[in-house]
Length: 126
Image (cartoon, rainbow, N blue to C red):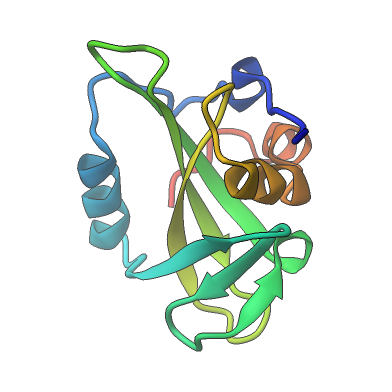
């Protein structure tokens, strides 16, 4: 049974029910963040720039944007900004969190230590 990230651990200045994932991705693109990361089983991510697969524990977590659905608060997603440990590219990674999150998403969130790392970042916008 996968461990679950408590949604309260993802509270931050970027928490929103007014923005969609597409709004957040557009904002990141407007700030020069154009690459993406795919979530893979076992706590791994794949960078779209260099196509390398890496352990999420070795990937820099730059920002977390928590989103909840307007009509259904259980639709919980996070847009993570990551930096590739292989090529240094910065990109977005979309995960779900909470009780409905996939095992792969939970593994990546745990590997990134989202709840521990974000506390040290403050509300840094890309």
